[in-house]
Structure formats: structure tokens, C-alpha cells
Image (cartoon, rainbow, N blue to C red; front, side, top):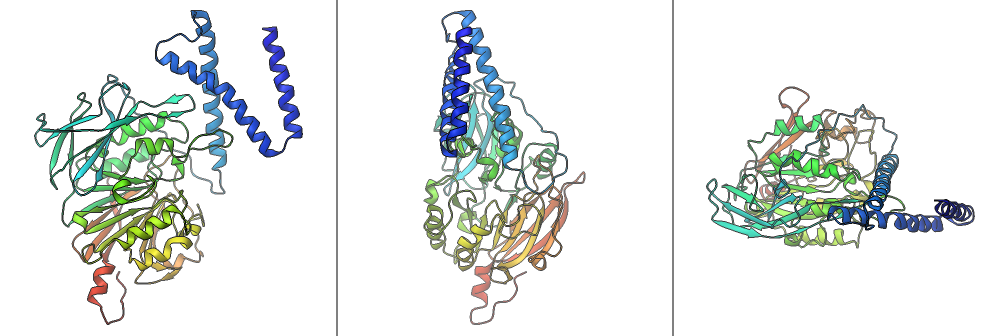
Length: 504
């Protein structure tokens, strides 16, 4: 023990001298080395213990090392959560947070949990789920009658580490071809519960639910209950900020269990928000590790080089949905910029009358929270959306609801997209209550309210759609805002040779 104390004292003296004499970059490097020296053996112990193996060769040694490893884990988790929250502090003072709704898994390790689905191509579906048993098969059995599985799809699984956390097996398997507007019954890993999904329609009409900044609180549970597990909609779109795990990886598991009743029944198409980044100073952790492992989207099918931005067709190509990444490089010459240019160029507006875009940080915002955070992306990409005649742009990030008129470059323009902020799904941070009355964009804002809720976009036909926002402060989801939209592509065909008129 005396020898250990002398070594520890010598290490402290060295670190002190380095801290006094070394520049900031050197300090970061030393911190990373010190972290690795401590974290690596602790991680090895946790892995050995998970396999039931001894780390030291005797019971007392394992007991001592185990206590040290668990103490280190608690210290790291506490410090990282504190650092993350401090790094995200801004000038906006939010109301008290809502308690988390934590969902436990009380079934055998081989039973699937956190089941969610997403569309892949024109007639296939990706089924994603987690098993604590990392040897469980990545197989989905399915059919059109309960308990009668006439086909199957085989995929693969992955795991990831985050500090001392190691995920269960995260499975992804694609099934299809599937018929449109059809209910399928399926089972994952040949074990556990049977689930039911309904495929989207191949033609219009189609209805999207749109929610942002969801989290896992009592407010979240209210939003999900108002959306309803019965599923009077075809697809859910989420513009970022899913679990609000914020480095606490078990919260990703809890979130998956919370949304499973809805996410296993209708496709959930998501893009990343700032809460999915989960990187920290000093510690060498890849950004979006949990998000990319758990929520795999159809990037390959849309020609995207990244899971952080992609696109998909809906209703047989009558609607094209583009998911952009606010936290992936977006400037001219970036992969995302080049991909967006190519993706929009491929859209034939004669067969695709509706073009929808989702991103996280809003380009137009009169709320005090997150002012100007989407401006650089707007400057880099707004012209492309305008020239492609995008009909509507949904954003999250700001925890309130706001709908703007059609805009281009900070001016009302009947040929520009309608901008809607829908970051009010139920996150733990509370609502962004303060709107700026004399904001330069206030005259463009047509409806704004700081309440939790969700939105629905029902595309009725090639020319007409209706948007409704449902507030859930009440016992029932109350429709507080409604507006009819006309397709810009259809309007252009109808007004050839004449001046464009306001589409709202």
C-alpha cells in the first residue's frame, strides 16, 4: 500500500508540473493518455466479469478490482453527465424538468426488445431490435395471419461500447417484398412476443405524424398516447433529438422500450439532433455511436454516404421526403451538400408532386431559444430547396410550435417552402416559453405557441394537403392549428404563363 501511495504521489507531481508548463493541446493529450490508462483495464475487467471469468485469478483480487472498476464507472458517468450539461448551457432558462419515464426489461435475455421499423426502398421494411443475449439469431419471421409465418428475413447484429457500457446485440433485418396497405404479423429472433405492422400505401392519400425532440418523460408519454397505438396514420417523421440519453447509455434502452408500441407498428423515419452527438472533450468517443448503431436509416438506398442524411419515397413516389443532418458538414463541397444536389435533381416533379424536408435546427425561428443556430445551414442550402420547389420544411430543436408562411431568404415568397418548427414532443428540458415580439421574422410567423403536441400532414391528392397541429396539454389532443397547402409543382403546371399566386 505504501508503494502504491508513493507512485500515486509521484504521478500527481508529474501531472502538476505538466499542467503548469504545458500548453493547452499538451494538456488535452496528457488527459487522454491518463484516461486511457485507467479506463482500459477497468473495461477489460467489466468484459471479463460479464463472461463470468476471473480477472486476477483469486476471489479477493477480483473483489478488490471489481470495486475499483465500479467506482471508476460511477465517477466517469457523473463527470460526463455534468460536462455534457454544462457544455449545453445557454442563456435560456427553462421551466423545471418533467420526471423521466423509465421502462425496464423484465423478460429473458433472448426476448427481443426496443423493436422499431423503417422503410427500405419501395416495398421492404427494416426491422430493428435488441437482445441482451448476444448470440440470439438476427432473423424475422412474418406472415399475414397471426402466428403463421410464411416467410423470413435474415440480417445481422452489431454492438458498441461507450465508456464501460456495452450494448446488447442490436439486430437489423430487412423483410420483403411486402404488399402496400397490408398488416403483417412478425416475430424477431424466433422468441418472445408477436408484433404487428402495417405497410404504407402505394398511392395517395397518405398521412404522416411529425414529432420532434421527443425524450422519455411524462410529457412524452402524453404525446405518444395522443398519437395512439391504433395507428390512424401511415408513417412517423422525427426531425432529431430522440432519447435525450446525453451520454447515459441505458436511457437509449429505456427509450426504445417506451416507443416500441408505436415504433413496431408503423415506420419511424428519423434524423439526428444535437442530443445524438454524445461526444465530450478529452475523451476519444466517436459521435453518433449509439444513434448510428440503433437507428439505421435507408442511406444506401438513397445514395447517401452517411446515416445522418438520406431520403425516401412515399405513396408510390407521390411524395419525396428528404432528411438532412444539421450536425453533419453541410457547406458547399461537403458530402451532404453534393448528395442533396444530386438527390433533388433526381426528383421528377411530374410524378412526385410533394417534396418534404426535415432537419433539426430551424432556419427561421422567433423564439428566444437557439436563436441563429440554423443560419449557416440556411445560407448553404436554402437556394437548393427553393429551386427544387420544396413544399414544407419541418424542424425541431426549439421546444415549442411555430408555423411560418412560405419564405425565401427572409422574405415572404409564395414559391418558397412553408417552415414549421415542431420541437415540442415532450423532452426533459421543458418548453421554450419566450417568443421575441419584435423579431425580424415576426411578420412571417403565422402561428406560435409553447405547448407540447404533435403534428399531422395528410396529403390528400396530387394538389392538396392539410397540416394540423394537435396540442396535448389537455386530456385530449386538441387541434390548435390547421392550414391547407397546395403543391408548388402542381401550382406551377396550373399557372404556366401566369404570375404565381399565394398558395396558402
